[in-house]
Length: 228
Ligand SMILES: *Cc1c(COP(=O)(O)O)cnc(C)c1O
Image (cartoon, rainbow, N blue to C red; front, top):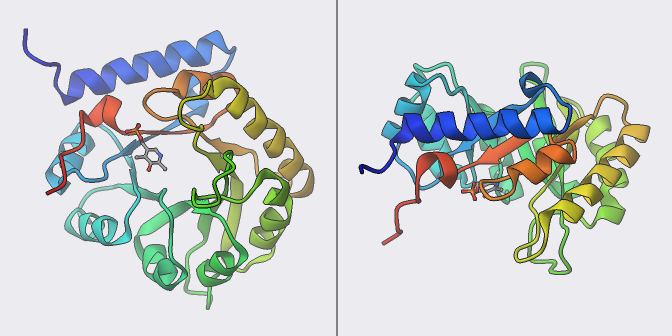
């Protein structure tokens, strides 16, 4: 039997998203499914666009900028989901609608609008759910202060919180913690209700804990090409 193609994988994942939403008593229409296409060529993004995909995720600026430029004839929305150096912030702003990985005050300042011509940039405060400071994200105890900083910055709109479940642990309690932090943040910044959580292996658990933005790569794209 042939391996299932892109269209089949996309439909299969969307079916599982809808099932998980209904199991949680939620409307699948309130979820944004972002297809993370890092390491894949622009041609794959074009195929996804032909299948109706609009929200794309990338985690490296150079690769994202090149794809966004090559595909600027398509009605795509780019989400930046990777660790971001402050000196790249201005450049990411040019193509991304949303940055999911805001993890420090200096990055908030670098992303903030400089003049009225700058479009509003959606932001998620990224939480680090591990004890390893090398992972992206702010410790959950620092989420509220960072959220306030985003909310006060010109040209930024705080959408909510984002997290990656720690490797090798049950994702459900991790996402339950994200939900708690989300509630604390919403108490300070009303309207910052979104939760960016859930990847190929754990999106059902994330949906059960209130995720609104799913970042799904390999389950849809197939394995990423091996880097040479
Ligand atoms: C790569 C990546 C994803 C998607 O991961 P998959 O396991 O391939 O679904 C989601 N979020 C971030 C931040 C990523 O870097």
